[in-house]
Length: 291
Image (cartoon, helix red, strand yellow):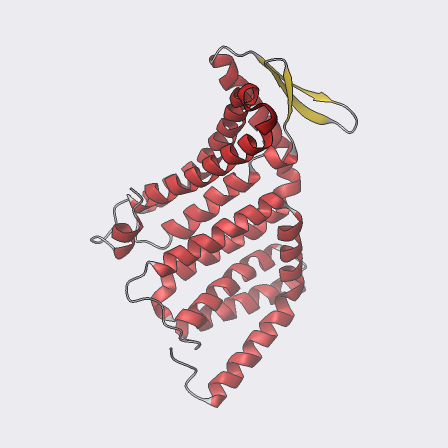
């Protein structure tokens, strides 16, 4: 473990991070609140954090602490401050999104040094996307619920189990009728957690490797589609297993949800690990492949 080169460096780093905290504390406080209040947003945050931890853990030679502003950490830090300044001057919150991305990358580069540039770039893009997704959650809730209910109903019809999707009660509840039973497609069933988790994990992983542009774009398009499909599949399996679950319905519901959630994320990781590098074969590909 190495420390800043001198007391002067340590003092400058302390002042720099204190200034960053002053610039971003409102945005960070809002993001923390949104994560704690909304379960699906919390799931996305957990995926992002654990994805980063596993990615850094698998790097050859480990990640000794550097705790110093190298050239890239400085660039990311300055980018974060500039974005925060533009957001205040122009009253455009979108600049804070970019600023938070730069800031998250700066933290990684400061802590672990220049060797984690690619993971830092992936984390910066994923963190900025996480901020956008957190803002969009209220707008995406009902459309995602309706899509999940319709898709699950379509799958049920293909399997010979006619289903109907409609609204019931006041306030309105989205209900899927299948097999003589009513299943509420609640906010927790909208799939936001798995969809955003797939997007964030894909962003983190594809920008941590030297992949062809077409492979990166293809994976980033495929990731949300996998999340949409997995959520509809989860509802389908729960509906089909409900008659046999009886009084253990809640246990079955949670077991199916967790299995499909982690299975989908593992599939995303496996797909990215199998993509060819632009130059040779990386340690990430050899160590991260899921068999």
